[in-house]
Image (cartoon, rainbow, N blue to C red; front, side, top):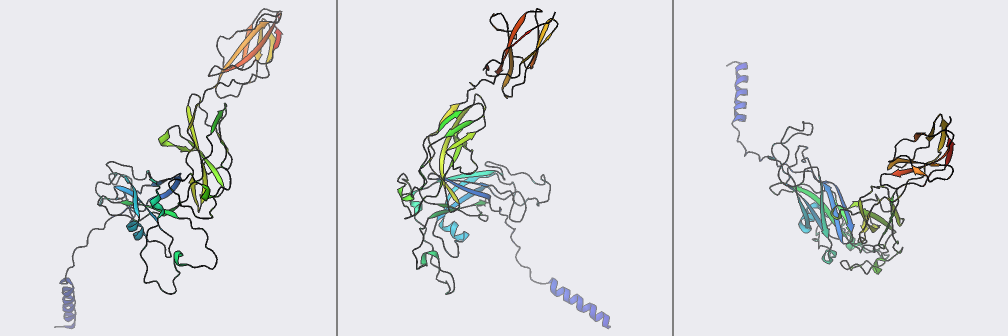
Amino acid sequence: MSLSNHAVFAAVAFIGVIGCGKKGPPLPPLVKLPVPPADLVAERRGDTVDLQFTVPITNTDGTRPANMSRAEVYAITARKTVPPLTDEQLLKLGTRVGSVTVKAPKDPDVTAEADDPGDEVDPPEGPGLDQGAIARVAESLTEDMLQPVDLPKDSKRSKGQIPSDDTLRPLLAPPPIVLSRTYAALGASPRGRKGPLSRRIDVPLIPPPSPPSAPVIAYDERAVTVTWTPVAPGASVQAADTADVLPSRPVGVTMPAIGYNVYDVTIPKAAVKLTMTPITASRFSDARIVWGENRCYVVRAAATVGGSTIESDATPRLCETLTDTFPPAAPKELKAVPSEGAITLIWEPNEEKDLAGYIVMRGVATGEAIEPITPSPIPETALTDAVRAGVPYVYVVKAVDKAGNASPPSIRVVESARE
């Protein structure tokens, strides 16, 4: 056998050895899980925490739609630790406070890549929210939630590791501890597999500020004005005896500066916050004037603690039907221009948005009553009146809005037509 034949034989034998290797068990299919819900926000109003977040639309590998059939919110009351509480501990020791049904994909294994066209796969179906929609969950705070969860002791803590907050023994008196409740959301697959947690939100568990006085509503053709009596500044949390649900108060903690949020509660189950951030004034102007609409408002006092805003209970709901009883301004710059057998009137246009037109009135200058010569409002700001030549006539003009309110009369002008 030649040298080249020996080389070929060795190569074939080596390949044969590799080909006859032992096969392993088949790998399980990759389980797709949704990305963490985005934009988690928690707002505390009285003893209720309102949470909202965006339902995921993609999986952790970037494919879509998200393999989920519900979104869940978890909460835990625990003292701060170093290192922080893990996601596993939060899920195991915390409480599921709410669940939202979400439309699920027909087949979780049939997905589209991020840069694929939108019609590559069937959209999620079934009951619940659309993927990408805003989900809302609410939790009512109870006295039991003031008790922090007992965390397992870490027996493996090294000597050089920073101790947890509850083992620190500072020389000076420690600052007041404001207990908080931590919230996080996740997406769960139809088979119950949980995706990663969202970012965490801490909500302080101290009594909310007292609500302001019942608001008062006044309005004109430009805006609705809501006013109220402000909450007394510098009120101590310890003095907030109206907090029936959360009686435990950290000693020495003073309620921060108070602001106010105003809500449109015309539809009680769909309240609309009209203030982007709490305002310090005890007065709010709402420029959304629509005549005939019913408008309802409540006001909540708001305090910011540790980056979170805590609102008081709402003031009593106050409603008003916006009725247009406000006449337009009197037309200005009325002038009379004589011509042969006629007098032409001109004036400046009014600026009211709800203007219906103008009524022109005429009388004989010798003293006869002034009567309308236009049976209904005219939109023009000029009118030519055919009259007898040589007779002095007096004219005034009134503006009329769509509600039928008439303005005061303009200035009087007297003129005679030429022969």
